[in-house]
Image (cartoon, rainbow, N blue to C red):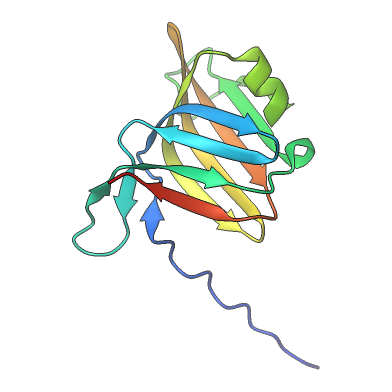
Length: 143
C-alpha cells in the first residue's frame, strides 16, 4: 500500500484575522475585499499593513454566505440560532450596506473561508463566507 503525506499549507504572508472589511466588490470573477486598515503581517514584528485583498477566478455559483442570528444569546455565543445560506451574488444584491469583522480564516485547495461578525445597521449577526476560486489570491499593499 502506498502512502502519500499531505504537506502543510505554507503560512500566508498576511492574516485577515481581526480585519475590518468595509465592502466586498465583485466585478466579473474578481472579488475585492476592501479593508478599513488592512491586515497583519505573519512574520515578526507582526505589524499592521494597509491594503486590500483581491481574489481572481471566483466561482460565484459555488461561493456562499451563511448568516446566523441568535435570538436567545449574544451574537457569537453558543445557543440556538436561525439563519440563511445564499450565494455570494444574492448576498451582495440583498445586503447593500454592511461591514465584516473577521475572526477566523482558513485556506484550502482553491478555497478561502472567512468567519466572524456581520455588521448591519442596528444589528450584529454571525457570518461565514465560503469562496471557491481558481485564480490568484492577491494582497494589494497601499504605500
